[in-house]
Image (tube, rainbow, N blue to C red):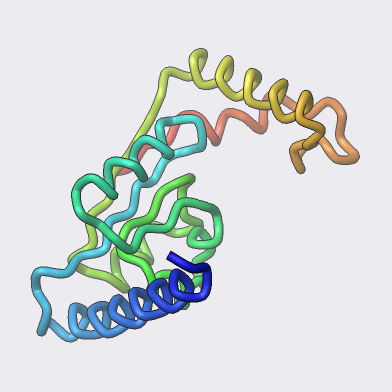
Length: 152
């Protein structure tokens, strides 16, 4: 498939999901739901994205652009989301009342080791993670809010 054809196919897919999102919010398309995998990075977010694809979710977004509360354009164009926790998942639940949320967690020590290995790999590849720019020793206290996500 040529790159131009692939781009058109993606644009058509986004348009379909914009329409289906509107119909779902209006209560017309009751079979269409948004799915948000909320959990910090290194908690199987890439595997969850792969699973979404195997389950038939064609329009899925794996990245960080969906996290901000004001990312409505991204939310309307895609159906399934992964890679991190949103700024305000309760607001997403209000906006998309039929949405489903998957909480993915990991043992804190395993997460810390995996995150450390990730940083080492990025460093070897010459990519410095943003959190280290101008801050060669981030405080470990910052990690507390990243590991234990509890939903009540």
